[in-house]
Length: 77
Length: 268
Image (cartoon, rainbow over all chains, first blue to last red; front, side, top):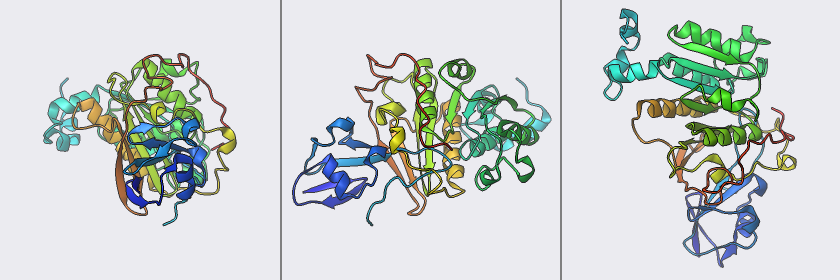
């Protein structure tokens, strides 16, 4: 199936949950990410059960503070 | 109001600009903007809002200028190290544009004092560096019906969105980020750093949004998170919807009183 993650098309063999997607996409600090699926912000407690279906549009929205920062996430290129 | 000769010259490029003109310039001179945090985001925002002639600018910051701030906080100069940031910024603004009245608040805004401060202003710019402040500012602005520009920056990336509570269609910060991250999951702050120009780019966009709001021109970043990646030199607009379960701006909000969250591990 094909989905869009932060605007880029990504292909997976099977449907997967938001938690699995966060792991597949190498999001190191999922606690610092808000997830929007098809325009709706998900409740964090639903990450483990919410399935991303074919054609789904996912946005990982990162908590950002100010002047000094920290390693929030790293995506494989 | 009538312009002086000096004002006609100072603001001449606005006065000839369609969509600003004499009327727009008068609006700016009669407007007030509160900038919370006079650091990486707040100083470039303040600099341009002063230059364009926003009549009253409020500056909130309890910190003093440190040498490590100067790489990105452009209103603070080397001789200012040790000085209160609001005082340093006020001096530069006064020198830049005597039309601007600057009011300084050299203390932290908390649940007990934020509302009375934001009430004095037409628009609020969040230039803070920590999550307790960002949630407090959002919630206070929603409760007071005060328009707000949110922003965050880290490393080579930044984000900003504009919140207009009087417009029911526009989501607030808490619609997108329902709760602050747990203090325990916020890692040490000194590791990653920040490119010196990031606040310049994002803070200037915040100032632009404030000016557009005051002039009632153009499309605001409401219902939109603008995400900027300096390494890829890419801007993305992410559409955001109101969250029906939002703790503060939904029809039946859980949060009816302001919350002072713990600062957590991220002492900036």
